[in-house]
Length: 358
Image 1: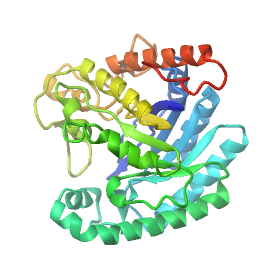
Image 2 (image 1 turned 180 degrees about the horizontal axis):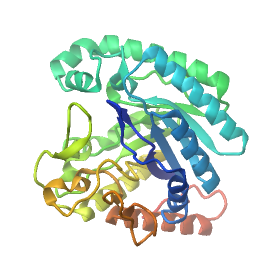
Image 3 (image 1 turned 90 degrees about the vertical axis):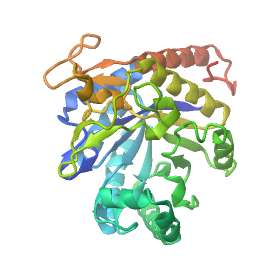
């Protein structure tokens, strides 16, 4: 595997709220240095739906020496609003690239589900309900795929006029993306669970056989016993339907940081063996899911974050001033990163096994 890293959420927007509050540029810059110097990651995938925040985080990542994956992750925009957002983001990414950054651009993420007009539903809740209905999904998907690929073709063409680096798109499998306009294949469906574990190597082989580098742009699980068998379905957070704010858990669970750590560490090896170019752990921090001494309100157990976000007003001791403490997954990934760096340093020039960690 050429590179690995973590996703960094600058704020997913829904019903007037974002998942990263407060957004503090100095903290963002410090966290990018931690991702580089403590995790020893090669890259960071920067996501979110606020244009200025994406640029601020991308500049901080570039300054830290990370490979930057600039990934707008919008919600409840129309097709034309999304195109406007993507083209503006491409302009911003190109300015950063011209200043010497190693940067790639993703023309959105999961747009069939997140964008108004591709799938039935004016809100994310309505579209997600359609997505969860297999019979309805089979009925509408041919038209959804056609509309999604038409939009991606327009987006790729527009981005090419503005951004001179490699481009891709963070996809869902159901979208059946035509990868012709793109330099690499990327999927947000890198999650392993009990139902797909046996089929995962074959799925990777199907992607890597298409002649383009493959990026797994999301994989991870939450922080409770049994989360590894659920993968992406280990999201057990209950949200207020009016505000989209997290208000509790959907079920009682037992905190298990070791299970989350083992899951992300094992999958890095699976992707390495499977020929994946780049993989991103989901996620560095889930700001909207702080921990609590009250087990019923400990939203962090439902978080995919590799750090435990502290209640408002508190800061950690491991990294003074940071509003979080590392979890076991953070430490496991730091060990993985150190081992990769040591092996790369020891490998002869041109050794294709460099970067692989047993």
